[in-house]
Image 1: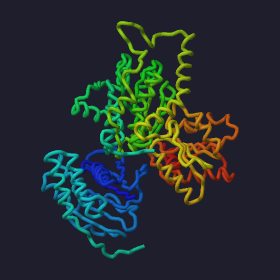
Image 2: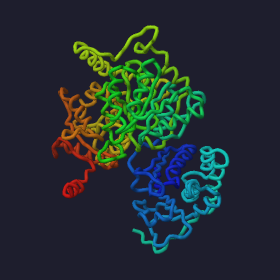
Image 3: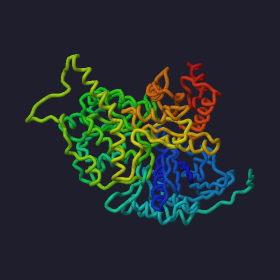
Image 4: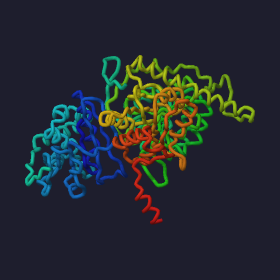
Length: 190
Length: 411
């Protein structure tokens, strides 16, 4: 079973991202379960969404404490919380950022993508917030191959018909191309 | 067992939240009238239904009202003339609705209501807890409690069949947020399958008819009220077999069944078992597997699918082979214990070889209940069997006593 934790801020679409990854995985014959963490949801507030993917149906509902993958939808979250808390050894972290994060060091792989820039270029903006969820899923696919990029694009275009679906699938594809791995320095393995 | 498959002309597959599974089931049940008032975490059920009406030209009517009390009154009015009716609520909404919920129970109207469980204030809270779902068990309603999104869909359909047959309204409970907002794949049977399972042209002796005028719910003297209550009592009591039977009939046409009143998990050789209901049952089952592998504890799970009728017969049969039962209640009866623990003890008291029963309370207000919590309960139950620890009135799971102390110091 693969456990993914999405860290986002209200309005960026973290919950939808978790749902889409389950829908796409199901297309590939895998089972999944996605759910948000809950509080007084409001725009801009930090929130978590979770997804579990497996070859067999999943019925575990506890929160995810030791994720295999952490997806960060907003670079400001790096200052707000310890994003690598509980990350499994050898796990992956994917961050939406335009600069390589300093002082981030862990036993695993780090990938970055400027999903905000992609969304601004494509005008994927709602009420002033770049909605980076579909772009970050492209990055997730590139970094982990949990789900194939073509399946993701198909899933996105099924969820949103017409131009808006096209824009989102473009964001996903562009992020897939632009995601790269950052080599972690001074890594102390323990 | 939950089978999710797509067969041309037989079923289709969708990836949905449990709230959307409720709405899809209500649509497939061809409900005529819905009384609607929003409250978290139920609101999206009504949002999905209005979306279907707008995009799919359904003949269903959603009546938007000013309160939950009126939402149930709408369902009651519709059902009184023989229409198929539905509503949904949670938490404070149910409390405000309570008068009408009780009245519908007494009126024997086959309404189905979804309750997405949520703790109740004060203090103000959104998180999951089962106390609200359990209240209507005393109000003349049956109460069913599915575990996952597929079962939520299937149980709403089963509930209409049970309600139409018994003229007892049915609550279908689902865990607020941890199920209502969780996305999972479900299989939706072909409409013709559902139509034949819950036909709308069933006998409706209660339906008001202007060509044959009568009233119901009118005043009775004390020489009849007891008799009305007795008939509700025995109808629900005798429905234990019906809930089993309806689940089996559903399996014949869909391939899915859930054990009727109780899903029995790894109980064949079990020595200790947890009684639980709802979404966290999956975590308890995982814990049973884990402690079997790690410690060789013969652990199993008794998942209550039906709270009313309370499955006294089945539970007694299962309990006969067990040495200790831990009842995990996501609710509480203040000063006494968990509500379900109280009922389990009542049900088993007359058994000759009764197991020890330990009440556990946890997860109130949405506090996360983890697989390790259930592993710990299994380990403790084994210690109880071995005489290493005793049974206490209640044991609390995940309680932060330091927080309790500091709060009361401050006030």
